[in-house]
Length: 121
Picture 1 (spheres, helix red, strand yellow):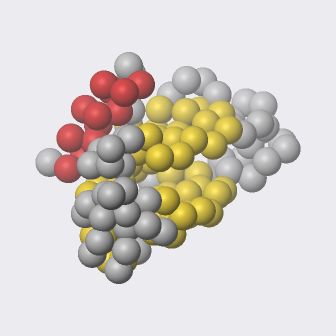
Picture 2 (spheres, rainbow, N blue to C red):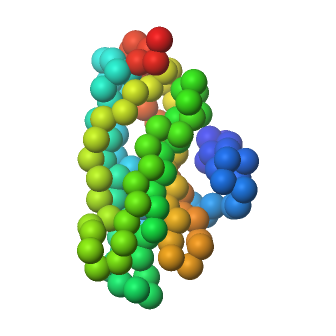
């Protein structure tokens, strides 16, 4: 059910359908004491060649006041498709990551994160 809701959200926000993928990895703690600084790592299995590379990775938190919380752009042969940062989360929720590949295909993954305090108040 959560994946279906995430797929619908991505289609509404981006205007195209995404496909759940094991190539895209969103790593976050399942429980975190505060929503102000939740650690997040995001990477995709990609050779980053002209023929097969990720153009953009975006992160969405559907229960935040501003749903899109991060956007990262990549170029072939010049960047590793991996980022680590911290984001704010308003409530416990499924965080959604979407990768746009060079051929226009959208790949998606989700992870559940429970925060004890609202990081967007």
